[in-house]
Image 1 (tube, each protein chain N blue to C red):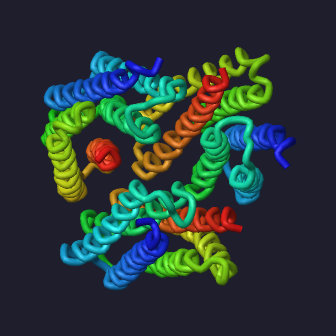
Image 2: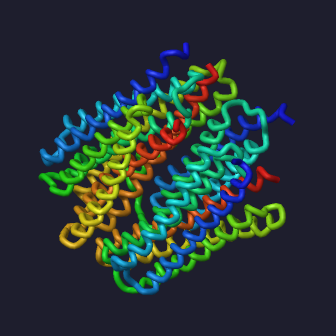
Image 3: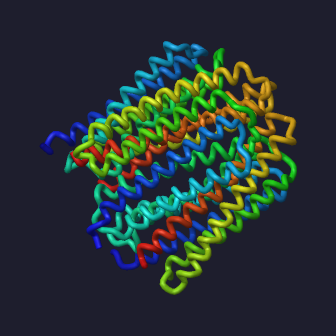
Length: 206
Length: 206
Length: 206
């Protein structure tokens, strides 16, 4: 009963981060395309839904299994935070669709690239957990990268908002883009939260 | 000392959900009336305050009592989430008052009806906890209903925001209504959070 | 190994609240000055960064130390919530800078005074924890003061938003100031969250 679970948790975390990477790649594809139609939104919904199901499986097992590879609270936080990445990306894509924001926006494109980079670093960090005694340094490097990208994202968002307030004459467009840029930065905050959990797990195992 | 507490927790959860139902009924009444004056706001404040006091009692007992009818963390989450329902309804009603949004808004009326339905399903789910071995299926049905209404609410909000951005010429009115519609959908999210806690309790008891 | 830690936690909480007080004093200074330049923002960042480092130390010790002066969850919540005070003040100051809001705003000045008062009450409450058997009543009085100021802040924000919506003709300025006033009120909510944790610690020790 409690022999192979340890591996399952790691497998599930990896599947979950694979969903987050897929969501970030789709987000970049849509930022390049410059609009979101109903079919695009549906693709993002499916990715998010798949990630959601994995998170539910993890939490369900956590409630039933006695021996876990690390602290129960950390498993719970990890699965929740990874889930939040695709969730927020879906929120952004839905806003772009509902608000009918159209045309390639260089700001959104820039954010999409940084987000994908950060989610891929999250993937490396989470993948290394399984084998942290050997690859602990790589895990830590990936976490540092996530923190660096979050800082970069803060500065990006601030510059974009300053420019938006100065140049955009249509207040309704200001409302729409302000929310979307702030949400985009939030994705990087969530990635940083995942990195924090990963680091805390490593500290406790040390 | 630890004999009758089990019943107290259930009694208090039921009183708390009764407050949430009262808040959702008042919200619908005010949406029908089409404005919120100081006396209306005060009525909502009193309902919220009563719910808040019950939540404090629950948390206070949780800190003092050794034996609880189910997992302490779940009791804590349940009381917090139920409390958040009336809290968010008060926030919305206060905004309608402070922002001086006047005249019956069919969107808000539609949201109020769905919110009341969802809060009543939450009430059925929470009421069934006491007796879950007999009425477990009814509890699960009520939770499914809450999830269905949350999905419906997402679609409603999106349609309303799309319409608002397209038809409303006054940007300040866009700012006000956008926030109120998003908050209304958040009430349905909170109901869904309650349903998640209820389901997790049932899983652990199974 | 586990003898002197008890004192360390208290020392660190006090250093953390000292950072929060410094942040609230700087916020008031900037509200009086009526603008935020890059150097001001940097000063706030340094205060926030120092508080952040203390929070990390607390959490790191919590993961390593077996005996703690009170409930581990409460230590975690306390350090997180105190940290959130400077965090939110940095967010506000950054917005004022990025949004180029200039000129002394009596509303912001009023909020800054109430925030500083509340953070100083938080400081008294947290300082009393170390010695709560003797100064328990002072701790409770400080918590009551924090709750009173949060209520006052709600009313202040509502009055300011009502006035803003009625008198400000520039919708983009409405967007900026609305967000800043709401964030200012959030600082008082966070102070209240700290007070709740302090009260819950006292209840458990009673």
